[in-house]
Amino acid sequence: MAVPTAVQKKIDGVGAEELTVPPGGPRPVLIIVMGPASCGKSTIGNDLSEALSLPFIDGDSLHPQSNIDKMSRGVPLTDDDRLPWLALIRSTAERVCKEAWEKNRDQIKSREEGGLGRPGVVIACSALKKWYRDILRGEVEALPPPKHDLVSTLPDDHDVAKPEKLVHHPATSNLLTLFLYCHGSREVLSQRIASRKGHFMGAQMLESQLATLEDPREEPGVAWVDIAASKEVVGERAVDGIRELVEKEMEAE
Image (cartoon, rainbow, N blue to C red):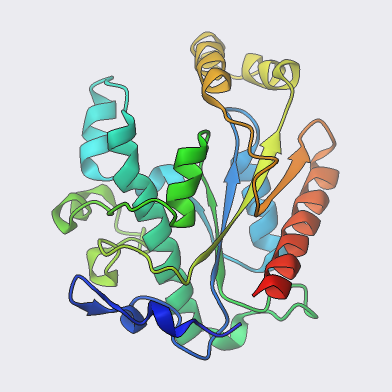
């Protein structure tokens, strides 16, 4: 679908056309692979990435320096800390899609070829609360971290959230956000945590996250998979679920 003309407004003095896929291009999509600790977000995210020929990013790698400094001191993040980080995930996703459209358009696979027929990116992020998900959807006003908070967070080989890509500017309304919820029972998640090193601390974190989790399955734009199935089955169901969501969105647009 073409970019709505309404997104061609100025954002902090920068035209929206400089930040997103330009008019005439298909609407870019951000796929958030979400769920609590040990649900397999990275594994499933990589499966989606490979099957749909989209880049994969671990959302934790996008934390601004201020958050990294705080976590390194053992201080838990607050929702005020998470808000700019979630906004940065969204703005980074849009810039990645824009770059793919401008530089590698011929590599974007059509639906007939197994892709989505549009630029997109898969990002792993727990997104436990509906409020977090609404920020990622662009439905809550939120600003990414300022430019100076980005520079020292990224290693040299991490080129997706550099200041020169204008990720400190908020994403436009053109970016479509979909979710893949990795659902697991308490028993399955606990078994996975128990098999890891440092499982005692992991078990405490899991309990905290399960208490925080607001089930997204009744929200629009959400597909889900039961992680109790085999890795191959979970991967297939995840891909099918996202493809179905994209089809629905195309019909609604």
